Image (cartoon, rainbow, N blue to C red):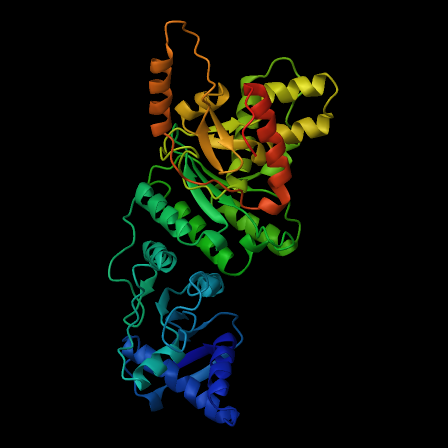
Length: 447
């Protein structure tokens, strides 16, 4: 029985065993590593040979795992913490999956997934069951396991989930990704949306906002997550009745390693849309918009809104989640007027027209109410409020009826607080747009 062990796996196991005892020799470390790998494969019933009959050979393949008898690949998870908890929800499986998948595809071998051998060995030494089942709270990991299973990747006895986190249909998958994103808001640059009027699915990728130099949607765990999304949607496109697939990005990626990954996404049947390039072609100096102009501008604007806020698939002013509109704070018609009278340059007008900071995602009712000044966004409380100075066109509405109407409208507003994701860099622009809205509807909230 030949077990080819990747150099990456040997390195990670060596580091862990050296932390236990710095006096271990290289031969002792290799022996411990091989024993831990054997324990895992044997427990998972991937092999039934004795340890003495297994020949462990180091290979230069860059993934965390082994190739068993040239029959299949076993990809190992990240190592658990000393108290056998998951150390990184995003890195536990996603971090190393893509390299393992690449090797498997090159060699035309199936992939199986097991718990890291070091963790299996330590659980056995502590008289614990080697099996590790992620808790229900670990939505990221459970989503990843379900994604892999639908891609025909086999999970083992040492690592599995009791039940699938989502069913084999698009809506269930979208709900699972939403739940995963909501429990991991600070470190998730990927989200999915299905267009209500069509069967198109949009996948959005946003890089690290704290360090704009990092293009991390194409690196590490985020690329692992994104790759799984891409492969699953490609595989299930016909079964899930998906018409078109779109991948939206927000900057240019010129480095060779990134363009290769964009090519992978395109080869999977996705239309790649660079929102940055799209917004540079927005017209503000035409008297009449064509339908295509309006659709393109609204699409770019909506994509930018989603980038600037921690979008929770709901109206920003209430909990309604259907038919959401990309609503300008400072209206496009007013931006165009300012451009034409010379107040704004063409470049600035183009920017403001699709600036995500200049917008909210609102349900149809709240879109109209915000447009007409019935509701406004209060900068002090960071919540939507009712404009008590609202004037109704009908003279038959007395103060009592007006109060009742406004109270009913107030009941439909949620109490949630809205914040920009990158508040430090966008707050001044946001205040400027909100102030323009105040001026237009003639209110002056207390500061």
